[in-house]
Length: 110
Image (cartoon, rainbow, N blue to C red):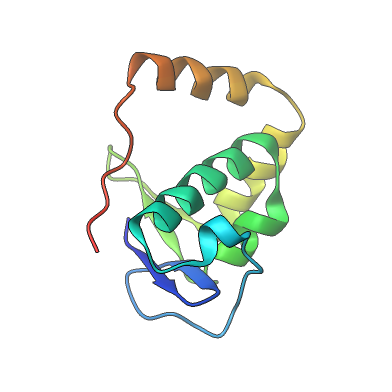
């Protein structure tokens, strides 16, 4: 995935940022590696715990995520999964287990 950090606007995109903005916490609003990692962490928590508003605000309408198997998931599917995840703690347990087994996090270079 490519993340573009621009002022108070964060979007995931293969293209350019749009005018959609997100009121980010201070730790996420800077143009730094630490801020980008904070957004990534917040995004993961939001998807796992059902924070559709945060995830929806981050993703442009045409956003698609391609998984390791090469399957593309449009924004609408990501938001639907976020809703489902928020209705159960199953995904939170799965992600917590994965993170324990794979302690290396994302790497960022600006």
